[in-house]
Image (cartoon, rainbow, N blue to C red; front, top):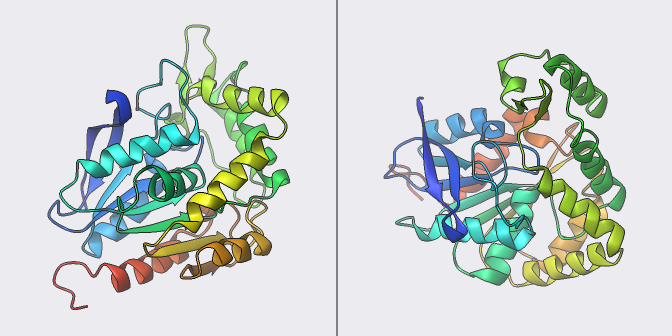
Length: 295
């Protein structure tokens, strides 16, 4: 099914790139990727959603992909959450939100704190209010590793990714990878996202060691306020969301539905796309039957 690339207005008039697939009169499903990703992370998923009768909208989060960078360096979780609220407020009906990692955290803050009753449901992809610090730092460390120096070639970037995800077959430096890189005037290749995004995280970690604990508490408080249908999809081999983190979320939100994707890591969608699509469609079709499908 053909997709359409468009622009959507986020918070403060920021222009966000989006890939739209499916009948625009169908139930909307808004997909928000994780840090360092782009809307293309959902490419197969959006096709599966559209085929099932949904209107899929996958966005590039602020500072990522083809979306605007925040001139003021506004990359707090609340800033990303504000974008999601702004997008949803422009839709004719409440969308189901699917958020991976950063996108899921933004969804918790958006629905639980900034603007309750904005979304029809919330699917969290390998993310929860309580995260394993080691897993968090592995992700942050990877993103920060070449933020200033970049890469001499796409092939070098492919090698770094292979080291970060040794469980996957090594990818070449094809068109898919090149979309995540930007060649600058110095001839080197840099990640597509605004370096201020990761620099802010690293600066805060060094200057305010207690910040992560406060953030966990704020996320837990916001999650405890969620009354909409909630679905957690966890990678069975995730080093970021532990079984204890799952139990913590279920204590906060007793109506949480839980899917565990065997052999998938934190990068659930890329590791096990078919299993992920099956899990999300099972949840969505029960809570938001597509047009023509009886409830």
